Image 1 (cartoon, rainbow, N blue to C red):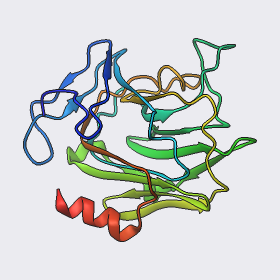
Image 2 (cartoon, one colour; image 1 turned 90 degrees about the horizontal axis):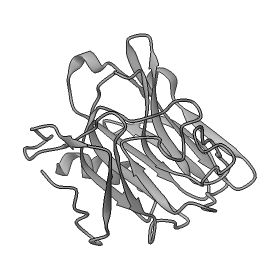
Image 3 (cartoon, rainbow, N blue to C red; image 1 turned 180 degrees about the horizontal axis):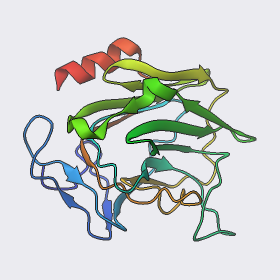
Length: 211
């Protein structure tokens, strides 16, 4: 709504580059709008629990053809310009599938990483110009991704490891997930909420409908 304030914990939000605002939001207001070489960062203090969820409204800009959206990951000091350690934290991002965009979650359990890619069910058409409700949940048994209140991807997961995960990037894969060129997202993002629990399907739908 025209500022980058974190409304619950009043934690510091750091602007990297020159992010901006869309001039509109899903339900009024003024949503975050990404810009080249730009994103927001906040500390992960209080976020690195055994369960995690995020919900937000999203209006996709398919240019560039891939981008990071929400990333909590460890620093890859050996590859500072192409970081890509995936054995801890998570990466929620998009990639082109023809003229459409497919959304994917990658999460690390300590020794390995797991992929949650719903194929056609996790694909949207940016040409529609519509706001889309995105959500994903991480627990000790599974990860689930939702689009518009419906399951888009789901699979078993042994539990997340947060080693080295001290920042959350909003609107980009940078700085911790750039090895595959998932840089800044020039899309609009509104009503971002973070949770220290794995939301149920009903809870995801309730959040969507309450907006």
